[in-house]
Length: 173
Image (cartoon, rainbow, N blue to C red; front, side, top):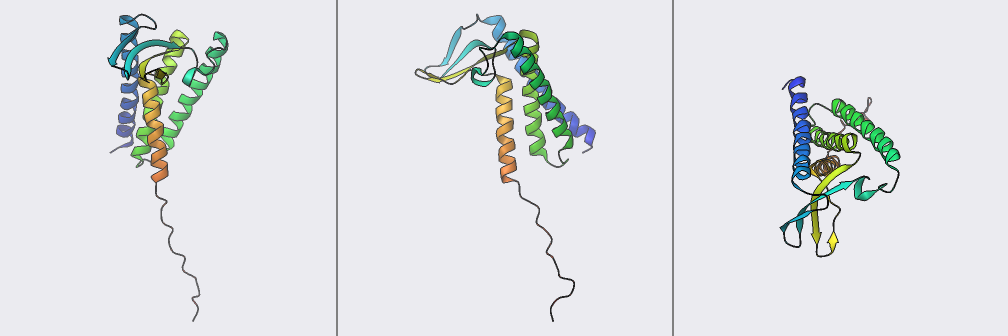
């Protein structure tokens, strides 16, 4: 498979994640009121419309909106650039690594678009057990999490190439 076809497929994966992320967020915003919750599986999962001005788990959500916009804008753009560079520099035959990075890149772009348009990220996937709620998240967050998990697993299970045995020049007689 040629390099251009490989990059096209990876780009399509990232694009599919961005599109699915943005379509689901738009659907939630158009069909629900902020903080409205629709139970899907009783005592386990709801669709809940939330806007998260901070990072994961609400980190920095109490900071000023201008600080958050600059901080998250700069870090998101840096992350997207870094991920793109990693993707291009990965070995051509490392499909697991490349697919993982493409998923992370798609998720990063999806959340960056939210930050640029709304100054915050739209979350709606709400898992809980009784009173304990896992922080709400979205398709982009899911792609980032799955991509990172697969990348860690991939690197943990990656086998080092075996070194060629060293043959002494003058073997003992």
